[in-house]
Image (cartoon, rainbow, N blue to C red; front, top):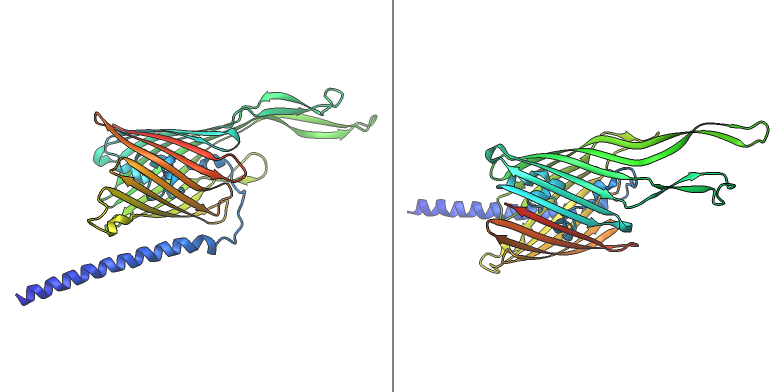
Amino acid sequence: MSTSRSKSKRTSRSRSEMKSRSAVFFVTVMILFAFTPFALAKKNKVAQSGMTYLAISMGARETAMGDASTAITEGIQGMWHNPAVLANIARFAASLNQVNWLVDTKLYGAAAAYSMGNWGTIGADITYMDFGEIMGTKRVDKSVDYRGFVLTGDIGVQDYAIGLAYARRINDKFALGLKVKRLHENLGHASYVISEYDDPTTGEKIRTRRDKEWKIDDWGLDFGTIYNTGWKSLVFAMTMQNFSRDMKYWYEEFQTPMSLRMGLAIDLLDLFPGRWENFDFTLAVDALHPNDHTERMHVGSELIYMDHVALRAGYKFNHEIESTTFGIGLNLDYAGTNCTLDYAYGLADFFKDIHRFSVQFIF
């Protein structure tokens, strides 16, 4: 009898020690995440990438939580935030997104994914940036137009990416995902000088120009993992987004806005079992290491009531455009179909505020 009691005490003591260590680990990592961006913020890497629309946060839920999205994104929205979570899709899912971005530009995203059971999940998406009408110009002599140029019409700027993704659950705690995307950018037609000389009679510069379509087609890569630690609801995730080789239009090379992200998320109410049973309150933190900016940190929270209504808020540290974010979400079930409607509002410095809309279906 005494032996079994001592074994029981040792077991309960070891379990409590494991929980304490997990708690200490969680708090330590959160603190490291909090101070890492500011410790490394002296490095100045601003404006070293192209196709920057790829860095705009797509999902309304994720953005409303300060874009602390690496560990909290769910379902089909993982096509843009962490492809590993596609492994959690049980059947078929689809999503539509719209971002009302800066200076009347808009970003659109559509995606669908299908679960193949033990074989994993496949998905496809398209991201399109709408710049509106951008008028082209052409230099002319002031005898033709007093301004020294004439309008040539809409230059037809195009930016879009088409992606294919695959995700698979390795075990009940760990999943990984990969997304390959075809990148296309077309900045329209424009002429450039190939030779010039001074007219010996008039002294005027004579330039020979050649017309060119300035476009790039290349490949990009996203990779993500997600790990359920098994302690409460603590989740750790990591992504590498927009990896690409160097590209160039003229002489200078550039990359897409590549970013390494690490995120933690936990439902804080799990720390108080038996209370607030109708609520969930998630806290999420992301640390980012981008190739075109100094290090950043994103913090977000989400309060859910009865799995149907969600209120969200977040903040992005070390951002010049969008910092404070808010949002709301509705989760609806009808005839075996689940539908989530999400909205996010972002405060933008020096520009009109930013609005995002997302709808997701699970069949």
